Length: 407
Length: 117
Image (cartoon, rainbow over all chains, first blue to last red; front, side):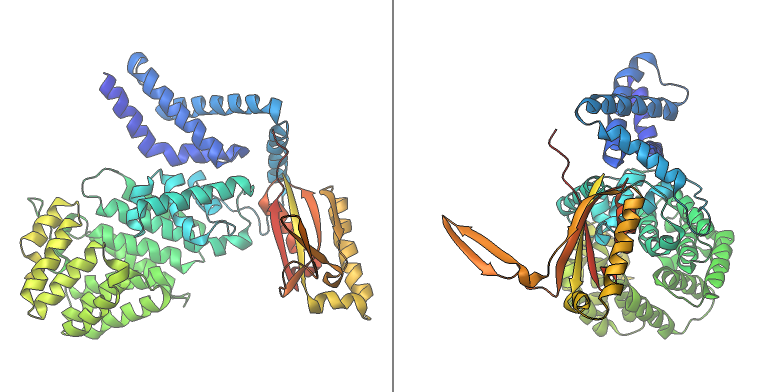
């Protein structure tokens, strides 16, 4: 019974954290106060649910408890700082009175609104996507750090600084005006993608539903931003990945690389939707990172049934790196180079990334394959061993350790 | 919440005070300050005399080091400041954006330290 209750608390914390924070912060209390109140409510649930049973509506229970905590906090403070209540009032007034150009933005969900708040230009742009992942989806600093290739300690610091800025600079929980939605979109889309990638790579399913949640946010972003081709590009990219999810493992759970996947296991409806989104986005003639990444996925899908000229993939990676020079894109380009018959050039590119990618599993895996193609088998084996040590995914470990990169 | 808006101007912008452009220069500031007053957000503030009138002091031990000029020789110099009372940073930024020097210099927006509890 008490284990059931604990699991129930964990489940609701996982699935509803962002939504509850958003609802609490929407009342003008600020992010830090909302997080404190929800933490107290979760602690109370851990105390109370094991003895009195799990409530029928766990979300509602937590929300009520957290709001009560906020009320107590505010009452405690009001003796010392009468300004807090006034500030909340002022906030409400402003929200009611502020004219929003071009009419109100129809935000479908408080979580997306919260993401746009985290993308305020007064917050360090490098911290914005990470902040969204923590505040909106409740990911911990270590998980976020892994997807942004920085140390957990550095990421923790960054998040603390960003939250302190929101609190101390008085960044309000208000829907940004239509005119500034565009500027903030890039950071919002990046965070949605990082959440999706974290969920996609999470084979152990420590965060079930994270990829679905990210898909859902991406759909919402497309609805909210019909004039933004990058939102459509992001959803297309995620659909291509999602379409192949089942084919990533064989029936006994072994990892299957892209070029050996059973294409009949790909979800054709998702692929068709992705292709349509990409075509719609292309009509704006404003290519960007996500449209290019989706185009690369589209090419992979096409290559499964049609002969694709080897230079096409590399050309797309060149364009991608020109707009978004990420380590991941550089590594993927090197892999494409190697597979198109230029492993020596690929090795040069990988060497150039050594400093930035030394703890990045794909860098070691690609390096192993490239060294193998160059006939340097001992060095290839060392790199493969390093790649094995850098992943927690048992299926990928087995694949690499079994020489999968060398076939 | 209280914010101070620190108005920085380029030399060119400030020199308009001393030319035939002076009425337009002062007119813009008067209108801007008037709008903040009418909106009821103004807590206080002042325009400052030009940086050439500034004197900077540093104390090392008991010795005063007094220098002619502002504390740092930068391209944009502090021309004045106000303190306003608004709900949040966005509201403060909206007022900052309307400052006459926002396009010919910059405006730094900083929360004022709340009184010690």
